[in-house]
Image (cartoon, helix red, strand yellow):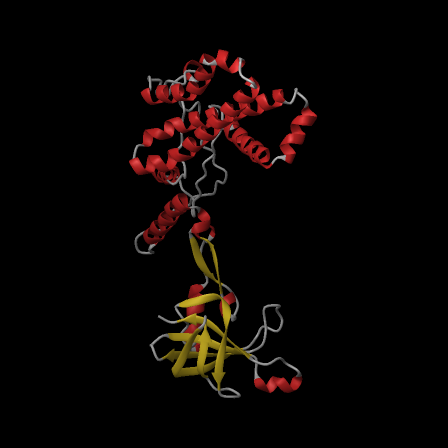
Amino acid sequence: MSDPATHSWQLWRDRRGRLSVLRLATLAILLMPFAKAVFEAGAIAHGARPLNELIHRAGFWALVFLGVTLAVTPFRRIVRYGNLIDIRRMLGVGTFCYIATHLALFFADQSYSPAKFFHEITHRVYLIIGATAWLGLAALAATSTDGMVRRIAAGTSRPLRDPEEIRALFVERLAALADTLDPGFGFDMARLSVLVAEPCPPEQIGIAGGEDTAELCRLIDRLSARLGPRRVRRLVAQDSHIPELAETALPAQAVNGDTGWSTFRRYHNEVALPPRPLRLLARPEPIEAVAEVPDGPPLRFRWRRALHEVVAAEGPERIEGAWWSEHGGPARDYFRVEDKSGLRFWLFRAGLYRDLAHGAGAPAWFLHGTFA
């Protein structure tokens, strides 16, 4: 690591403290408009409105450098030249300085009157846009210092004490960052904090299958470190007979122990439940169906503007609504149907015709899933 006190002000040096031609060229380009204004100071001073000329120059170059700064990341990926990321912060801070100069000169043009300055900014659209951009760049410039702290977290689905496994998780996490971690002139300190510590008892491996469980947990941890814990999920069985409520997706690292599927399979075998579709919609979608009254299967139905002619049907499988819950609803009669093109669907009729005499609403048809 380099000494920040020695090299932090030397903008022409790279993160290793060596002279960088790329940084030198960027610094020269950033200072070129300022040098040009100094060189033409006499002509500007004898112009009609010298202060207005400087305001326009600062605003123009601020827009130019802002566009160049935004183009660095996509251009770096196109040309596959990673060192360009080293100058993006310089360009961003330089853009901020030009916008700040533009606003300072405009403040001077308003006779240093805060009332006139804020009145102009709040009543002109282009000034509102410029001030908003300056505030955003001010936040970025404030966080583009060598003293900032970057926190990177990596979680595990089981207690870990192997240094190599912990190191692998942080390697995955660093590789998955949207932006390359720029150390500037070096890191002053890297600190590892353990937020949650749990006992790590001995495990039986081999015969009990502990090795397979460890490998699965290791895979979950690495995927969660690379993609994010909310993007790696496991389905957990819920205590509900309503199909859309019978399972939920939780972060895989938060699921420990039995997920409930062994109990569900045992119940499935005991009561001989009909097969469920491979794809279950998150919420049943309403369809238009023609069916025999009162309990016949659908003869044809329209789903997402497509008409399906039913050639085969199995059912019904009745699932009563959970009357004690707000998610209960009426009883459902499920049918497994196949159309002329060979597509198979899981449909249900919500409500019974016999309940019409008791003031219930008319039954409606829904599509809940599709089979492979």
